[in-house]
Amino acid sequence: MGFEIKLPSASEAAELRFLACVQDAETRDTVSRLVAELGWHGAKVAEGGIAAAAGMIDPASPPTVLLVDLGDGADPFAALDGLAEHCPPETRVLAVGSANDVTLYRRLIAIGIGDYLVKPIAAEHLREALLQASRPSERKEAAAAAKRARLFAMIGARGGVGTSTLATGIGWCLSEEQGKRVALFDLDLQFGNLALGLDLEPGRGLREALEHPERIDSLLIAGAMNGTSDRLRVLAAEEALDDQPLLDPSAIDPLLASLGEGFDFVIADLPRGLDGMARRLLARADKIAIVTDLSLAAMRDTQRLAALVEILQPGAKPLVFVNRAGALPRGEIARAEFEKGIGRKVDGIVPFDVKAAAVMAQHAKALPAAAKSGKAAIELRRLATLMAGTAKEPPRSFLKRWLG
Ligand SMILES: Nc1ncnc2c1ncn2[C@@H]1O[C@H](COP(=O)(O)OP(=O)(O)OP(=O)(O)O)[C@@H](O)[C@H]1O
Ligand SMILES: [Mg+2]
Image 1: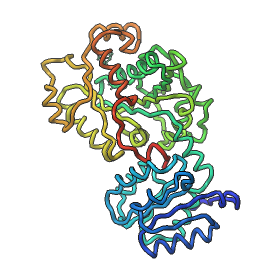
Image 2 (image 1 turned 30 degrees about the horizontal axis):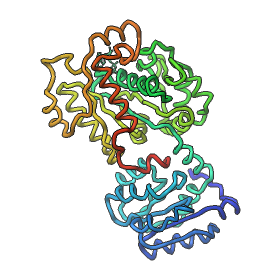
Image 3 (image 1 turned 135 degrees about the horizontal axis):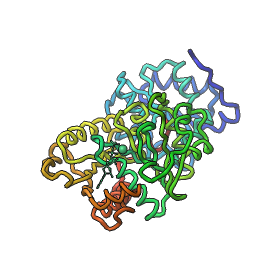
Image 4 (image 1 turned 180 degrees about the horizontal axis):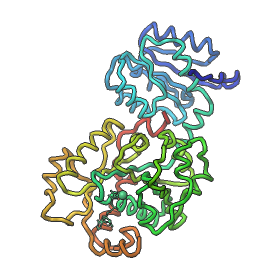
């Protein structure tokens, strides 16, 4: 079933700055004819493809819609990364190219490209994509997304390794010790224990928001949260087990846009079910941490999760946090061997802290509050700072700048 796209009004069309950097005469003709037909008088259609695009962008007057030709390059991501430096967040980017490859398409959409069309381009498809990208509401959404809180996704290689403990501990360090505004987001609507771990009742409305994204607004989200302070809020639910929530992965975008206004960081605790919503969140995250222990099974699954992250967000370099180290000394793989097994270094090792475990069990507190000067708390503090960005940033990506 097709849907109708509202044409921009004459004044909106006049405001639009459109730049296309294409590679061949046929594409150039199709694009030129279309922009003339749409009345986009200020449109510029240039040759040179993606390689020329950065040099064509006027920083004083950047394009509102940018169309780049990726040619037949199978790996255009480095060039797109470079281009992100030259565009403001509101710019919508469309791509065309010769590769008819669904994996490439998915990766482009995952990093925030509005659409990808295979050459030779059908004029009606391009027309639809251009109109979609030029909708003022679409651009407003993109701008709102740019204001959003930074998103951390934390996922456990195995159950019980302490993902929720580290998510809560990192959130606590950032909010209570560094004065940031943090939302802890528990994606496990049935078994999640983020709220429980802080002695909080889950709020009401998270399920509704994730099942009906069109209902998301700041009131619904505020009602779904509860907090230990103004700076540390928990977005969680405790849905009945005899019912299966039908979550709509597209809810992630308006949810993040809504949280973006009030928080510096959103820390998502992902269940390992890896449903569509968890995958979307991994694709959107600014930082991803895989939490593991030093067992053989967790070594295998850390490696497999890192490979998945590479597919969902190429170049994202997930962090690997070992937790509960020393809890089972005889059953643990040595660090060097573990690193060899996962093919990367670990970024932190949080020891098993017996004292903290006892206080957490009795008083439902975050680990760094339970044993403030213990070795586990000290390492957690370092990891919070690492995630929050004093460490080197991963390569910039369109993901952070546009919603796909
Ligand atoms: N570094 C640590 N020192 C001591 N106890 C810890 C540490 N990390 C986690 N724990 C304890 O381990 C248990 C499991 O932690 P947690 O619930 O965070 O695991 P999880 O990986 O989120 O589990 P699930 O797979 O059920 O979501 C909890 O009792 C927690 O208090
Ligand atoms: Mg958990």
